[in-house]
Amino acid sequence: MERLYPNLILDALRNVRYPGNGRDIVDLDMIADDIRIDGSKVSFTIVFDKPTDPFMKSIVKAAEAALRTYISPEVEPTIATASRQPEQKAQPMLPGVKNIIGVSSGKGGVGKSTVAVNLAVALAQEGYRVGLLDADIFGPSLPKMFGVEDEQVYMHEVDGRALIIPLEKYGVKLLSIGFLVDKDSAVLWRGGMASNALRQLIGEADWGELDYFLIDMPPGTSDIHLTLVQTLAITGAVIVSTPQEVALADARKGISMFTGDKVNVPILGLVENMAWFTPERHPDERYYIFGREGGVKLARQLGVKLLGQIPVVESICEGGDEGRPVALDGSSITGQAFRHVAREVVDACNRRNGTLPPTIKVSLQ
Image (cartoon, rainbow, N blue to C red; front, side):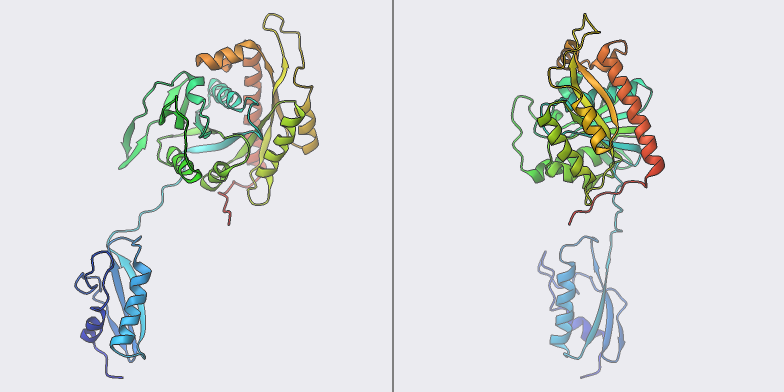
């Protein structure tokens, strides 16, 4: 093999063209001034504009091949890479949030969103800083329940980043995909599109400092649930069910999803919604129209805490339709029930944080 010298190396590298524009990497000034030669060993650095250049690996392989083809097969190249732009560190998700709570249910129709909204309001009424994300992509109900269907969402700049400004009502910061789509049209998105929209509402919004960040999850188990546990370190989950056997069976599946080995999100407790019907004018009367204490029994069987029982009262439906959550009225039957659940959730979070290690994001292979 002939003696190696820098210009010989550069001449060989002129045969390597950058796919983006067809020019060779020497002409593009991509070869750093650090060529080192030791016998048949050659080392140097190829400099790219960005640390995420998609052609980085292919350019390095092409450079290695060029040296062996145009100089000698005996050349032993060691090629490093560098970039002209510093690598930007990924922004941490929700850095100012102390507790992230998923509100979930095994099936639809059990009042999960009603519980999520009123729990958020009750926590705010207790003096906590609260955020609420409507992650039910295909059936967002948060705008209606807060009476903000016609509100516009704006952005502002924070530390050089353009961030969505969550709306704020009743002391709760809130965002929903419902703010970004036509409220009278169906949302027809593939799973990947829905997941990307959720990541944007989480990571590209100015949530600020929060004690509790609640996520109203879609019913059942889906790609959205996986997206959330892979995106956020969820402190714990609140499971919502009615006393009916069919709802309880699905609640078991929801609990199993969170507590499985791959997900491993702690269950903070179970809320039995629609536990009984109480006429507003006769608060002492109870009619168990959906079964009696099914949630109580399930919590006992699975060893999870019963956070509370929420009765069916006419005002809870009216409050949701009128955009005034019933938890705002602490003297009402349901308002008192939600205040109780809020205090139980706070206790459950404190107990969880005092006895278990911090949650980490899920990595599902």
